[in-house]
Length: 145
Image (cartoon, rainbow, N blue to C red; front, side, top):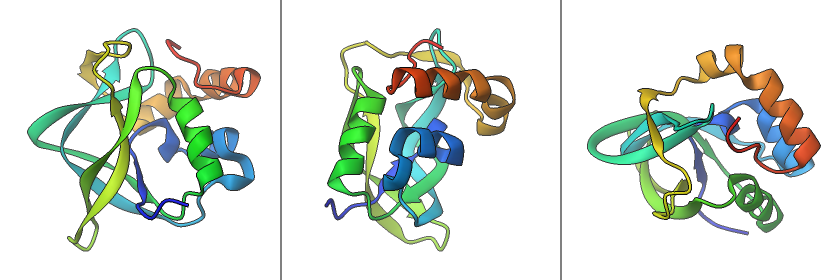
């Protein structure tokens, strides 16, 4: 089991998506946090987000603690080609900075940022139902949807 928490900044902030991806392996302990040095955009041609480096950027999300190796394998499959998990710094609500694992673009160009900022509430209202339906059917991330 990994010792670092994972930082979720997009669709995995949604409890329904976490259940669809991880089932009973979903982390039980989550806490609000902010990823330092990144900005979040809607991925080009898709409804899910992508982060891009930005020295002044801050991305709000959640830290997921106690992610098992089995859950990590499911997360890797969910994120799919175009992403890799890397160590970055997040700031907890109490101001303490912690190391975390976060899925970021892998540099291949398989996923690219669009021009608009991504917002969880807007995504939930406009895209969640179709996204989760495709996810449950495909058992992997429904890319480009």
